[in-house]
Image 1 (spheres, rainbow, N blue to C red):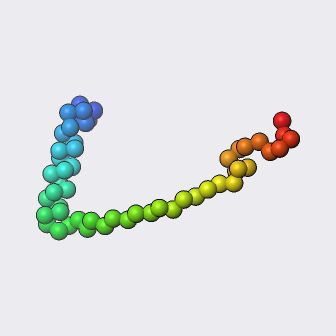
Image 2: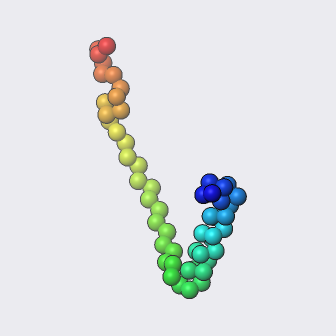
Image 3: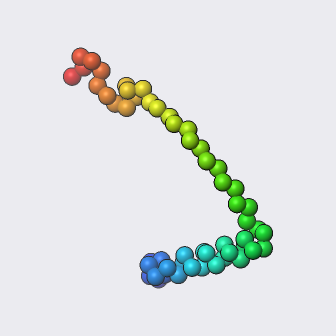
Amino acid sequence: MFRRRQRDGSWKRIFVQLQAEADAKGLITWDVSVDSTVARAHQHATGARKKGAL
């Protein structure tokens, strides 16, 4: 039953309707956060072979 409702879009329609009602009542705070952090690992941390290692 759950999968059928998921495939026909029922759950999404219910969620969108509930979200719209909550937003209209001011119950949702829409905050947007953007993070452009880049994390880089040292070549040896990625499992690369060291020079001379077989």
